[in-house]
Length: 285
Image (cartoon, rainbow, N blue to C red):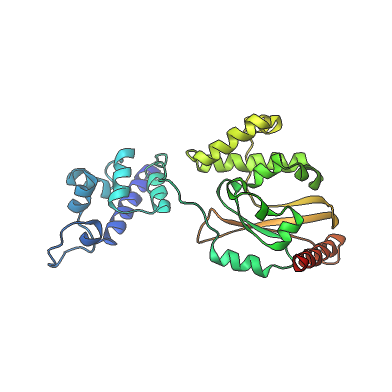
């Protein structure tokens, strides 16, 4: 069996599984209450909801034809598919995904918030779409900047790197850090090409920073994963930190970024000194 035929068969099975999960009542159709030969919606009911013929829909489920993008979008609405299901449906059909609906403002997942609060000796932040800073712990604020003093709409890691003069002195190799940020933002743009806030961010930084404009035009890409950063901290001194990212399963667009150091190293001691300094500052405020 060719890969195209396999994808068409899988698409048909996926559609059958999704309509089996629905009832007429959940999609606004009249329900006689009588026995049904199949669980969930009938083929003709799905076809009616998607404004296509029953014959066309039947052939889709049987893997006999390819679906067009408009039909896939109609089926997405008819079957009440979630974002990941919609993306999977379009992927099986070999079509670019439909434009996502307007996304609600991200809020940090409660599990990540609790974890941040427990990480008293490890600096950590939660990054969302566009590398927005959604949450942070006290040590991250002491190590990088007081995120709470930044307006929420401007609380973006890439924007800080390019617009906050302190970032250029904090990072020992600012050029590498900044160029990597641009490559990571380019990957975000590939995931969400229609995100107006991301487009506005790129436009803003392109106008105000020649280096950003040049690096953006290079089309380099990178993902948040692991690495090492060297900092020249005004309180803790020289710090060489390993960083890692953990993705939230409840929202893959939220990533916990943590910075750690090998026990017994000057950086390890420096982090603990910084944590004590931050605690003392908070107590005195």
